[in-house]
Image 1 (cartoon, rainbow over the protein chains, first blue to last red):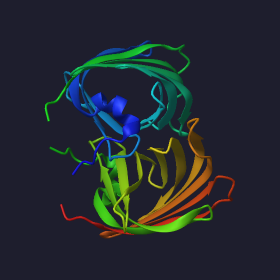
Image 2 (spheres, each protein chain N blue to C red):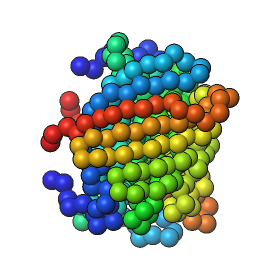
Image 3 (spheres, rainbow over the protein chains, first blue to last red):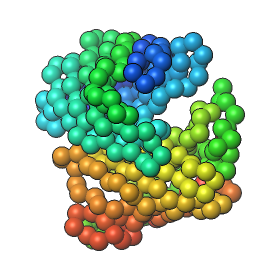
Length: 158
Length: 158
């Protein structure tokens, strides 16, 4: 049984749910690609949101990226995100929330010894009713911070 | 449908599954506590394991800790772990695997602005058939690295 949403995350409750859709990725060092994605955002009655996502290649259905972490609101207009990725990367983000619009920038990107170098990540996420859109900019493998991912997802009816 | 286990994680396949059990936590700055825990370890056919866990207080059933991340084997005897926690903490661990025994030490612990200070974490995890045991040592909030958690879990029949 899911407990009531904690008052400190009430203004984030429109994020809670399962979201599915498609996106496109590009970067100077790789071939552009299209993907299908499922995002799950949940809570346990405490003042944070648990977040996880998985993507698969749109044509081959091969699993691509995944990540898991937590959104932590700080008051009503600030937000932290901590996230881990199977590519050996962890990110700590801080930023703002304004209505349905979240802007985050990495304050720490750390990698394990065998991971590729990632230096900076920016994430912009908007929720408008049952539609979630996000963009990710990334600076990695010697390239400056630049556009990497864009996706649009729809809320899966519960 | 779950794909076959990637050959690079075949030696970790005894970790895959859902595990439930109980543990005990202690630290100089808090009251000792007992908890119930569920750990889930899965894969998608790629050379890593997805890991998540949740604990609840053994007496009050109140949700306590949670974390999510990924195990990344490096050859047959080394292992990386990246993990994010709702307390605003990310950890990058590196260590060894020897049969069912995993020894990991943090190489990076990073925290968001509002998180408590954690400096060092060591994790020892053993799997013996359908029993998983782990210990976590932690250096945090000005205290030196010391014993923090111990738990024993059983594999949930699938």
